[in-house]
Length: 282
Image (cartoon, rainbow, N blue to C red; front, side):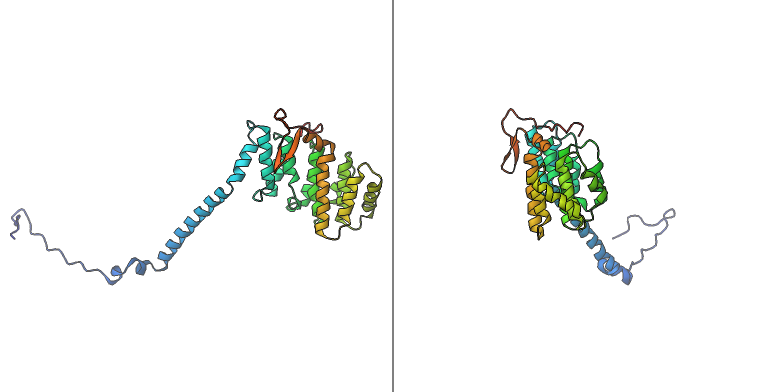
């Protein structure tokens, strides 16, 4: 085929194009070119997808916790719903002891909700900083007696497990005006060290003749238990005793009754939670 634009005086002849031949290294596949970096990139992508999936699964698995936290802190919700949310949180193993501790100190929550959350605290709550925990229980201002008592319980449980309990805050609590707090503090002192014979004898005497001999007897049984199971069973009974017999705790639960897995108003008219007389400013 003839060239449609033959060279002329003003159109120089163009040189013919060279034949391009690829070098041997350019003929290799991507895998051959990049070697281990190819697998590294694929591995990084898989890791990224896995981390995103793990995060999404974590959020999804905690959906019930987020729901109950929202209901508990929503002041527009009925008090019964907020208390039931607190009950579910107190039983949910995905909620940490630190979260329960912080929730129990919120003054804008209904007292029964705070009570349920504080009652769920265990010896584990003291492990991060036993000294700070004990000092907070002994010296925090504005706490109602029932709340201070419920926060003293983890120290009592921890003392039986060999936890290092600060002695001075316990001695302060053993001089507290509330006789129930004094009893629990005396038990914790006696349990934390076998050398505290005076506290052991005090507990025995109070079990015979004291303001609350039935509670003192339960704590003495925990002190003399031969194994962890017996000790914790006695402490659990002493915990139930608090709700039924401690004046502040009884006031908190006034108008409420146990119902299934949680608590509800005993009548529709009692939709507002009871507040204890010593909860002013709590």
